[in-house]
Structures are given as C-alpha cells and as structure tokens.
Length: 247
Picture 1 (spheres, rainbow, N blue to C red):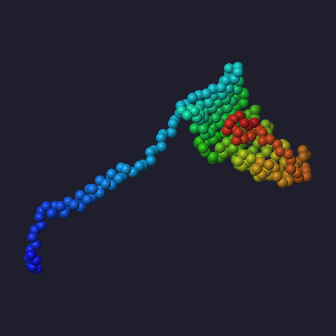
Picture 2 (cartoon, rainbow, N blue to C red; picture 1 turned 135 degrees about the vertical axis):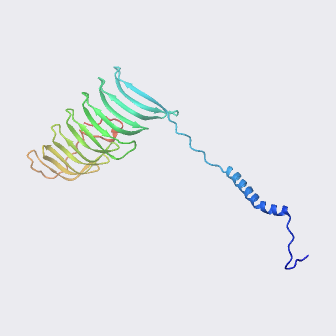
C-alpha cells in the first residue's frame, strides 16, 4: 500500500541487513584469494646456480737434474678448467728465487719481482688490485744494483714517462710510452749530459727528422737514425706470461 508523507516505513528484516553488510567484505575476500592464487601461478626465473669454487693445487716443475724450476698455485674446476690463483715462483738452479708474481682468479695482482742469480733485485712492478688499469710504478736494476730504468705501467704495459740509466748512473734516454710503444719526444745521451739523438716517435717508430750529435757534441745533419732495442729495462706485454723480462 502506498505510504503517505508522514508514514513510517516498515523495518527491514535482520537477515537482509546482515547480508548487505557482509557482501562487500565477502567480495573483497574472494578477490584477494583469487589474486593470491593467480600470483602463485606466475613463473619466476630460477636463480643462477652458485659459481663452482674449484679445488686449489700447487703444481711444480723440475729440471732434469731434479732441481725445482717453478711452482704455482692454481684452481682446478670439475669441468677441467684451470685458473692461476695465488703465487707463482721461478728458481735459479741453485735454488735462489728468480721470479715471483701473483694472480687472483686468472688476473694479475699485487707486486711482481725478479732477481739476478746472486739474489739482487732485478725488477719490481706493482699491478694493484685484480683487473686494475691504474698507473703503477715499475723499476729495473743493473746486475751491480744500480738503477736501470723507472717509469709507470698500466696492467703491466709501459705508459707515460720513462727514464733509462747507464750502470754509471747517468741518464741514457728518456721519453714517453703509450700502450707499451714509444710516443712523442725522445732524447738519447752518450754520456753525462751529452746528447746523442733527439726526435719523435709515433706508435713505436721514429718519424720525421732527428737531430744527431757526434762524440764532440757537434750536431750533424738531420736524419732518421735506425731503430734500437728497448733493453735494458723493457717490460713488454709478454711479461704477463714471463716475469723475467727486463735488464
């Protein structure tokens, strides 16, 4: 029956009021369960397996006379791979240490040194942290213990300014390197303060006119003189394989 403007509506049943209140909560609960179930079905990539650590071994090599020639620390993996990982040493025949270098997971690191047969230091090079290409100091010595060469290297390769000295102590030659090759201006001396040649290098080769001086110190006509060795004091990239490079 239609209600008048002042009529009081009939009360709604309690079960209907309860159902209306519960329905939004139930919907939210069902929606949440559905989302959770869907999330469980999402396939996530499996994490990478841990890197195999391998087993350390010390490998030694002997000469025919039975004397120890070298020893090195390596890491051997189940698949047969071998990494240089630790110190490596070489010995003179009488057992005196000839060379020592260090590796960390196949990367050169730390200080590398070589010695003459009488035990005097022959060369010293710092590689820094594994994989570093920062400039590090390097030095070489003559057999009498006097300084033969000094400069910087990057990962074992000469870089920047280098100076070479005679056993008497005077400057023999000086110039710059880039990536192990002579680059830019170089000066060579024949004695204390007396120039022998002066000119430029590009990628390790002499270019353009050079000025040459005779034994009396008189400059001769410009020419391009023949190439000469970087010994003593060289430290080519091959030193990564053999630390005994140098004077």
